[in-house]
Image (cartoon, rainbow, N blue to C red; front, top):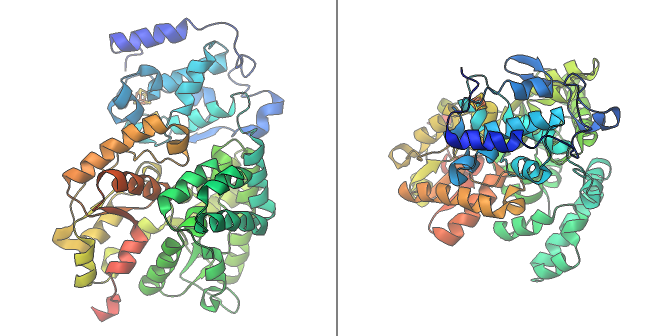
Length: 484
Ligand code: SF4
Ligand code: SF4
């Protein structure tokens, strides 16, 4: 394919970027493309990227983008703004230039990198499967100050080393909200203390908050403990969203698993590390991963092989790439690979024939049902068909496909709070498609999708609601397969 720009706009953007040669705060990063980073920065970054074409340095991965533009129409930020610099090829070129020490307009580079949704839609469309989201994240980690936020660092450390204290702070914040003084929580900086300023918006969008977290409820259930067992059909991994905010999702997942797949356990896991990974705390992300791997290995030694089920697609997708965290580590790399091979998203785990039969009253309450492909499910894990098979079986003629179902909702972790303008534009297109489908219930597998879509629906289309896949299956499919 041609290495030439495809149109005038692209040529202009390239001229702008090419003219940016000179000094930059990135110039120190990498003049030699084979030397990934200065030694003191190595801990902040991944090693070689595991791409579809094999292991690549960051520079080589970015250079694999031949700027063909084939992915342009898949990229939400490009489609909504028409700006080349915030398209996949624009971002890949920025990273390449940063690594070459050629980019001077750091504000442009920051904007290009910080506005990426990390949705992965570009990689799905790309013949070379250029991992733009990974490349963008590595670029962000090179920015001065990225990951240095005191509160975020304290929150990650607390979650890692004192999860009980983290839970205490979070409950305190929730209690203030329940007392009817949510502004006080903001004023006191309770969410900042948790390193999650976006959480105040999130809990506002959720409406009700739990005072007992899923991990506490599941731990209290003796049927879900490993003690005394020699084999299990599954283990449940509680991601932070279902654990700390959507306990109904975690409990529904466990009920669905028990009904469709028999007995299993709760893994008593730590956070998967995605937050630390995405917000500049790479060594902490590795430590989360190591501790989860150790826990998994201990269970495996007792119980043999079992699938590890997570019910937030972002976390499931991230855990499937644990090997990427340890490419330079001979001891941990194979252990991470074995862990990743056991991970399953709940969206892909329930076979349609085991889903059960729909309860007519529950189905009527759900109304017209549609499915939103969470980015980290479809682009991150290639999961599209399995949840549809289950939903079509349960909802029958009440199921309707959503136009542009894999268009990002704009939630993207904390994106809606860090880039509210673009997030609102991205969400608006999702809401229009939901309205066109005349859907009453939108099913999703990502917890940030639930927050984002429900916030949008409440404002623009209040007769509809977004629910997690597990909650829908749990509510609608009451009968066991055996009872059919
Ligand atoms: S990311 Fe892939 S599809 Fe997009 S411009 Fe680069 S090579 Fe082409
Ligand atoms: S990850 Fe999403 S927002 Fe970022 S460049 Fe790719 S398609 Fe665009």
